[in-house]
Image (cartoon, protein in one colour):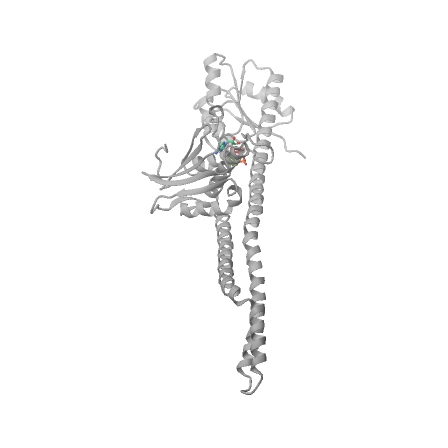
Length: 416
Ligand SMILES: Nc1ncnc2c1ncn2[C@@H]1O[C@H](COP(=O)(O)OP(=O)(O)OP(=O)(O)O)[C@@H](O)[C@H]1O
Ligand SMILES: [Mg+2]
């Protein structure tokens, strides 16, 4: 059975309240009542009604004050409030909306109208909740998609060195086989009797030396070993970066080595940028650790790098140049660390600069972007870390995104 919606009816006039309550109960709602402002607040907290009908002129705390209090406490902030009142002046209506009311009905009320408005606002609240839930799902899906995309890139990155380490190992195996044959023959000569046929043995050693191509092996084996050690080092580096990038438990705020985080993210994302750009870093020396949630910071840096690479890629496709440049710099600015990600892409047109941080704003085709990256970056940096994120862009020259994070979580100054 579907649970009925619960409404709070707050009115100090018992007759008015009775009429309203009876009519709403008949319509199938569950009702909680209050006759003063204070009681309304207590009932709201205790019963968490889905919607609140509020009179303005009540003893103690009036309706405006009650509405303000309801909107300021997280448990009740999202519950719609409808004022039902005999105060009908424009300034009262305006005040009601300014303290967070969803609607306003003047007395004498028409019960049919009140019920219709209640039903509309309950529907809106449900729709908002559904939207919030699907937004969360979408964020999760987008994160998974970006992890999937990264995983494909990382697989490719690991595959290349694996390929040549494997080729080199096969070559070393063959070379070792030839050398073993040669060694066998040399051992034969060493152990041959004084009067044995050493001339024949020497001739077979000489031909085995030719087969093994000693001169070539002496040059190629060390090179091949060196290349393989490099390749294995590269694989180990990618795996370390991947582990650091997606380390579980990095949602918690803890001191972070920002440079290491940026470098890991660059490595993990290298398949996204290396075909279109070089990355240069210019890091502040002796930068202190910064308190932040590593996993979230990595996501932000990742999105800025991917955005930069896309902007450069677009410019390359129009034939402007063959390879662009992404520059990542860090600086200490008083109480803040500043991280700048600049690109030589086409820049962001003035008319959309205000909108790039909006959720779902994208200029990219389906499959290439969902418009969530900068919205997530904004909420991570500004809402969760008390920092700031700004953008400068010159059309035809490129863009720079500047993040500021406080060195101390307790710092409450304004980020520039
Ligand atoms: N470095 C940049 N250069 C040019 N335009 C940019 C740059 N960064 C962002 N933009 C613009 O801002 C829009 C929003 O960026 P955002 O990262 O939020 O979403 P997206 O990259 O389109 O998609 P998603 O990040 O979800 O894959 C982009 O579609 C692009 O138009
Ligand atoms: Mg993006």
